[in-house]
Structures are given as C-alpha cells and as structure tokens.
Length: 75
Image 1 (cartoon, rainbow, N blue to C red):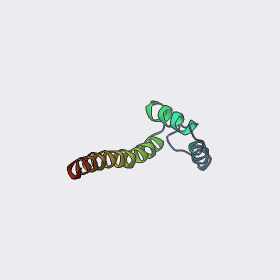
Image 2 (cartoon, rainbow, N blue to C red):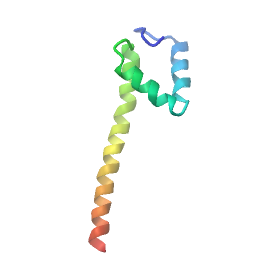
Image 3 (cartoon, helix red, strand yellow):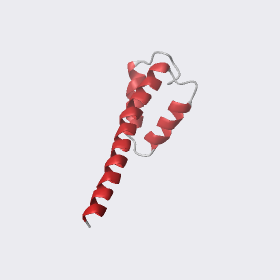
Image 4 (tube, rainbow, N blue to C red):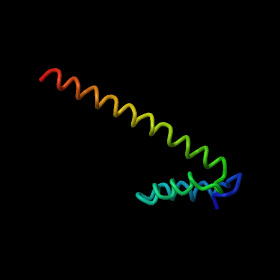
C-alpha cells in the first residue's frame, strides 16, 4: 500500500488513521522509515515529522542541563 511512488488520497487517509493508534503508530513509523520499498513522498513526510521532534528534544536537553546548573548555583 505504501510502496507506490504516488500515494492516493485513500492511502494517505489509511496512513493518518494508523498514526492515530497509540503504540502502533511508533511501530508503523519505524517500519515505514526503514523500509526500502516505502514511496519517496511518504518518506519525506516521515522525515519532516522527525526533524521538529529531534530539535525539540535537543532544546529540552539543553534547557534541562542549564536549569540544573542554575539550581545548583543558587543552593
């Protein structure tokens, strides 16, 4: 279903419905991103979903480390 180069509207609807199911969405996400048969448009969409998450995790780690240092400084 997701191996076509151009996905139909129904394919996208199925994809978004699968992404709504907790737990299963992570498994399907990993399967699709590492599968060589996944269409390029879907892979680009998956990469576009990963980039903001990665940026937010890095920001969270930097802020957490800095808040720990500030907390240690004032105690």
